[in-house]
Length: 186
Image (cartoon, rainbow, N blue to C red; front, side, top):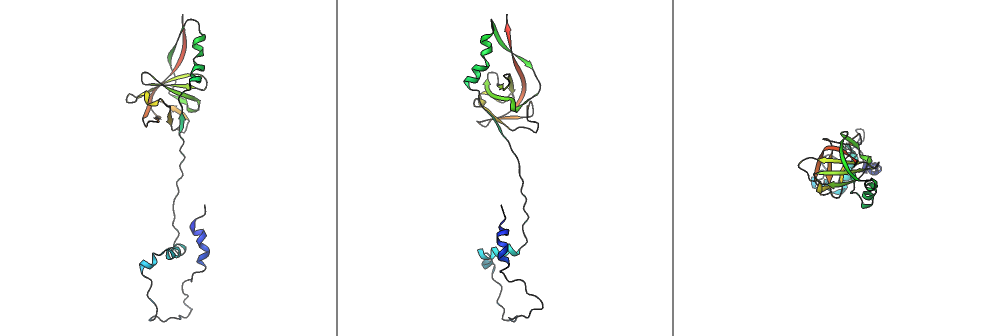
């Protein structure tokens, strides 16, 4: 977008320039009118003249890139699709929490669901289920409608680094990640 000075520059040629020393003066110094008062200089026309003839202002523009990712709650159809393996297993089946790394890729998270015990269940695109523990001061019920997260430079969601923000305004840090693995009891 061009600046205002670019539009006003042609009008500068219409204004009289400063007097040249070789040029004879037509008006004697005694008969010369007083310069306009400051109130008259504040008129809109004078501001344009000052803008054209004055020193251009140097302004800085700072562009920041901010990305926020929304993880939505799990839909009933997706939940049913992920838990069909339990029904197919003969006998009793249950999920067991196993240790995993401290980070997981944000792009791999498909949905989230609040779970009992101050945990969120993260449903991954590769059909894994991850249990994310929240810090003690947070309640998992605040995240019933999903959460927002600002990704780091590496695009990972990490323990003790990233904060999840609920739509209710609560901000909580992750305190642990566990992978939920289906185990058949016999």
